[in-house]
Length: 245
Ligand code: ADP
Image: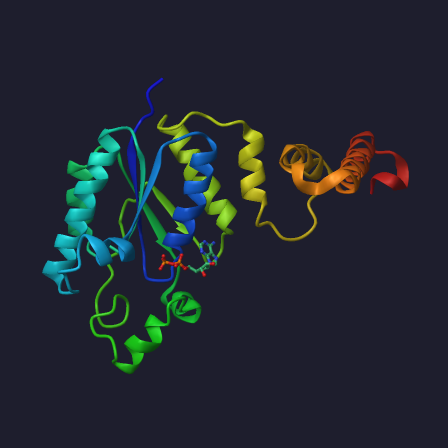
């Protein structure tokens, strides 16, 4: 079956998590044998759009160029992930009309959170005036009104955001429905705290085939943990007295 192309357009403030989510999705889609390309706003600016600045006009041209390339890829069956601030609603809506299978993902984190992350030190520079027209500080960001997906990265884990996007792509029949176990694994990778026994039962089963490099001792340890967690799961199911609490 020929792979369906689409463009996942990740928009949001600098530091909201677009690049991080894009890379996580790239990895997941590749592991499903999907052709994937990531167009990162910063990388594109250093190559295709070196001539452009940050005026409204230049920003629009930048986004149109990225949209043009993304559309070509999408039309040829590539799962294309764009990670770009793309602050203006009008131009994003324009792309929605012209790009093959355009899916808007709002990577939503409050300005204070993005500023406290300050991944590239740009907020500090914007506050000190070293950088002008910085989105969120002295240049506007217009959030999407009806995005297909919103990832609240101050509240969700990276795994949860990734799983949410994959689930939507599956529902839209743009990617095949994966073995649920892999989705569980990815969404669980970031989870904190102690999962319940049944959860552990499932997830341990998933991660086992990926533990080839553990060596003999490691493999025994993993199998022992699997056995132990399954014992607890069964005990819980059977409500066996105090063992199952
Ligand atoms: P952007 O590409 O939007 O500028 P980055 O992905 O470069 O943002 O940086 C986002 C930062 O936020 C990273 O350091 C990442 O580890 C962190 N982060 C914390 N929680 C999340 C989350 N749920 N999703 C994505 N990134 C997160």
